[in-house]
Length: 220
Image 1: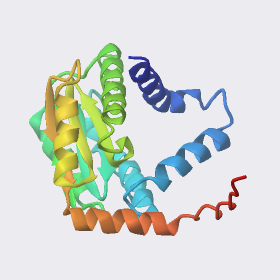
Image 2: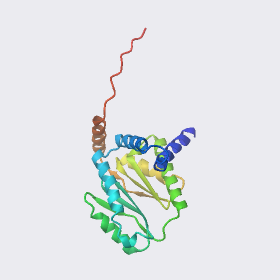
Image 3: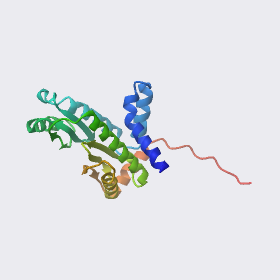
Image 4: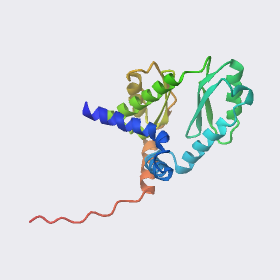
């Protein structure tokens, strides 16, 4: 129980970091967070940068006539772009999807926009809390790294993105669907073979600085 509370607190802190940047120097908060996440990410640093750029470009591609009265979020992972949120009519949903699909480098667009009224701030805060609970439970499962899964929740629907093996995908889905508050799970995971994931992990490990050799120990 204590372990779960600590994991949940850690995951909540990760989500809260952007809001704390006004109190802590951005260089410290941003640099440390990016360094930790980048080191354990299965995407190359170039792809991570491309995904961040894609999200920024997508936010600026929303047709002007649909910006007011809409709530649209973009999440890019390994050049797959997920669109979530609400827009007030079907034309807006289609227009936004078509606009962002033209961004250079985007491989696939998952347009999950809901046609209807925008959610309240309370609902969005609850969605963020659900994200933190899913991430904490992924950590507690000890079967998959939470850094290999990107969790996005809208209106109680949790979307899972990432590059994983089939076993890891099953674990992530099982964890998400049994998390309190999750109404539905949408699997947008990119499933790769065990050999391919092993190659990616070994390549990422080899690119990092190796720890210094341990000093010898003599027993007396």
